[in-house]
Length: 468
Ligand SMILES: Cc1ncc(COP(=O)(O)O)c(C=O)c1O
Image (cartoon, rainbow, N blue to C red; front, side, top):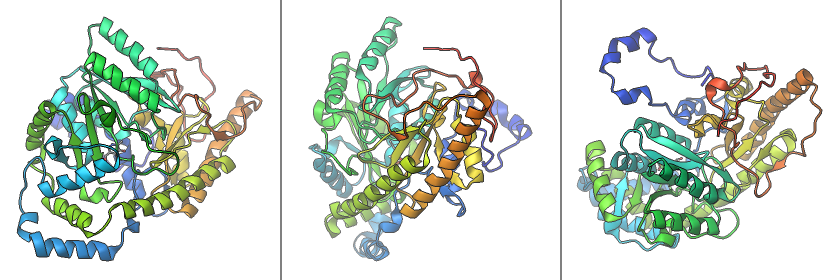
């Protein structure tokens, strides 16, 4: 990334000293764009629409204090102790309850408690991938999975999305092509509900299709579902796990978005042979997840209906989503499009192709507003003119101001392009993208082939090569 906000890193000379010691995989390891942007969220003068953060200020401090007091009174020694790798029984029953609320019955033996949902992605990769193995996922994909796929040297194939989620027709053709090349993907990674970053949801028919495809071809699917319970409109859809009954679906979820990411607790429910290998993988990673956190969550579930807090979050986030959608319509130029999420935490905005959002971020930071550039969600160079916007982590007032600032920066680029090229405005009015519209640009545009762009200056259109 070219944005100049990173903390100072090691110099080339520092790196050279240790270079011979580094594993091969470090050459392809990638830093997480979101983690890099985390530093910004701590800068008070920047309105960060970049995070993926739930608003933890909504959790009552008194409840936190009394829950911790009850953990100290009832389970002090056990909370301060190591626990079993697969997780404590007390929390597994909470997990079963959460899954039941999303229409899934689970045997607690089929559950592995993890250090956040992020660890599930890591453990699935650790368990299934050899260098060069194929992982199929959406385009765009969860930016936090990108460093994990890179660290395990996966060959990631990304499938176009539209407003009904991953295009299962393209998935099938791609799987056929891979099969002709003698390549069988190790798993399909998907966030079917309120996708991060695209904000769209896989339609029921496509869910059935995906489960059918996985079953027929005996392919594992990693269903990552942190947001399913944060629905602001519409009716819940069956999860892939519910549709497949747990034969080929590895299900992942987390307490991060319904309670707190600070507890760092998630889980996987998987076919037993896969779960056993993941358990061994976890032993090598962290022995077990925090016992203190597990007792805290269990005390929280015992203290009253956990759904009440989720309902309060839904009210807050629905309003914030609506404010962001209204502000986008007011401030973004008519050349832009964006998704209308029915839940979750993100809106995905697509700008004209001549705007490079990685470069735009530097300009936006001058105006003290941040977002995640779209390229962070692709491994094939696409996403250059898209951006992820988060509406859960800042107040309604800051969302309005942040989108106003961002709108100005985007308009500046559109106007500049018009002046440089004499292009007449011809795009439809600014709006949420319509059903059926693509969420990812179909053209692959490797980083090396995109025109050099600097902040404040829109590059003149250059001839582009179309590759796939
Ligand atoms: C799709 C997805 N998966 C996994 C995670 C990781 O969450 P955690 O490790 O906090 O459970 C996130 C967090 O934003 C996410 O959006």
